[in-house]
Image (cartoon, rainbow, N blue to C red; front, side):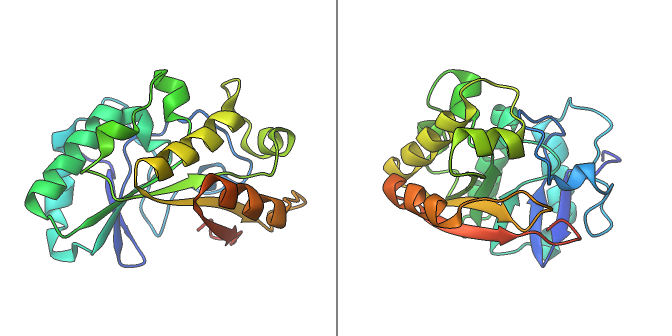
Length: 207
């Protein structure tokens, strides 16, 4: 058993924290504000995470197994794509009624230079994708991406996720300091892409 939190509980649901790495450095990111989520310190002592490490911690919490499990932690879960797929397959094989969701910045196809979404069919049910802004300028100011072309990649990822049949929601965070996002424009963009839309009002506890 590892001594760090790859699996944690939040609001009665199980979350999986695969990495602290990310291709964004969002201004509102909780890891820049506090060291824990509901008492779970999600800063990992290694990035060499194995699927079995996650499975071991998941099984230790199986009595709290929820209807939905979410890949979401202090980094971008899809940067650990192979681990994510192996863990998702284990869950689907052993707990087939469980819905699996990925909370992502939507840059995976840009990172891997291929469309990875077909690889996740049958493993992942839902995507929550951070649109974050109504244009590239706003997105870059809020998300501080390290990759060029990130905003267009995010929109394309949303569009492809819908096309592949995933339950897809685009999200924005509002109410953080003086960062203004045009909510109506984001709704229109999301509608054009075929996805659902969700506004996430900023909370002091970060979630």
